[in-house]
Length: 168
Image (cartoon, rainbow, N blue to C red; front, top):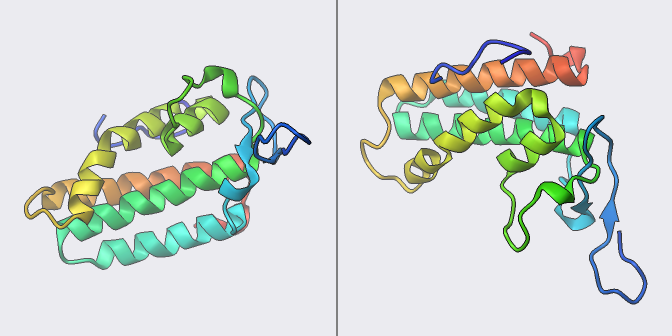
């Protein structure tokens, strides 16, 4: 990853009926349009602060599956903060009829975070299984690793977005 350490595992138009889209920011090579009702109700700074608190909580979880799921959800909040800052229009990259995941959207609006997005997209299925309470789906080492990766991702995004007040 060029901006940091790699993860440890490697609007309504009248009469058209289309949803109201808002522009929340731009990216030099792409812009993403997001329906207004799908934007977060919290500011990017609030999302990042919540993610930091969630990571602190995750680190204290005894069960590896809970630790893994909570840390991965914190990373998801970090990605949503980036989307909230950089939302514009990159719809040309999306496959028609297929919803985009947060990680796909992140790749479009923040290409410099592509490796992070790929990493967390690869680990999302395991998070879902851990949240479902499937026993022994996550090892202690995997849980510790995703917590550390989510912390590094948060630190990278805090620097990238210029939120020095959140830097540790």
